[in-house]
Image: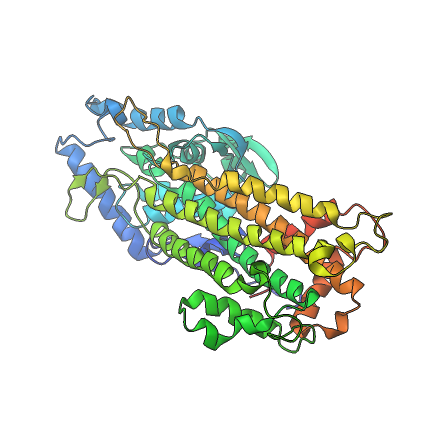
Length: 506
């Protein structure tokens, strides 16, 4: 496309039913804008009318004309209903810690708008429209990363988003940190004055844990594919036995993900002169090579499960109370993050295992007693340490992952004077999952660098499969082979970031 031509911007319709992780990713990276289709707006208006009718009929509705949590038995005067919602945002915007990255904030905003568009939350059209405009114009609230227990919704994180809609709080706009009111003004937008239930509708949901979760899942897919590729390079460096990847062999244990991994690696290794067969050099490889389909495949099983759960959650109404189509307004527990908490804890373990087995393959590359290669892949071992200490770094990251992989969801601390006596800690699980995924990308980058160095020492580049040789060139653009000792910390990190952001292996 010529630079003078207009670039088509995708429009992602937030209808409450059809959002998926790729659409979220497109909004997050700025290649798509969002809109609410008319049929969804009809549901939003109808839901709002039901709220107003109940108020006019003098009905008592939780969070509309009552206090919140343990204070739900306190009735609020009609003249104070709007002030109640304002107070809620101010009281709940108490997150702490470093701000969440802008991509995560954009994901949270997109997911919350989609949930509201289902038409079960009683929000006004103009309030939802302002949230959509903030996404499209690039107003990004500053959201501290810590402070949610993952039940009663992600109250603190979502409050930091919602408070910008009323012109308070802080937001990033075009690279500047501004007050919420100033950010809206510069974008040509006007704050809203919240009415009944709207504050609660904006913050009572699971969109912080789900927003982090969607970003983490997209990154996990890239890390998993990179793990498969790193394993291919290591197999070529060490003359790995491809016989263990035979489709007929794998069919007797018919978990489909095992064959997905094996077939992908067979395809990538097609044409390689470095791969061996059973009995040619040795009868069996170590588990970290022979069991790649079983170990990587199990992590892909977990990935698929988490993707299913997140897709349901992305298209769910997760606040309380719910405004049913019958007109009844019912308090329930859809804000509870347990489905996502368990899912993200599962993803933590799956991603940690990609790193765990990768580090063991790195050990086989650098240990001369296991590889038959130059000690630590040094050109002049003894005088040079070669890649001895990158394996230490991989070991440290794997050990850290083991600590982070402890399930957050098994913990619960009661809140709101024991009214909210079981919470999910799902937002912690999501943040930990993303940290594990980033650590795993670093471990896999180290394996790639070590495999690249082994291939360099063996002068085996021309014997590689075409696919792996092409990928090896990408690795070496970032981290050329070591001809002598040099610091490669920055290159290790650059390769890890390349793995996390690029869909080069799909």
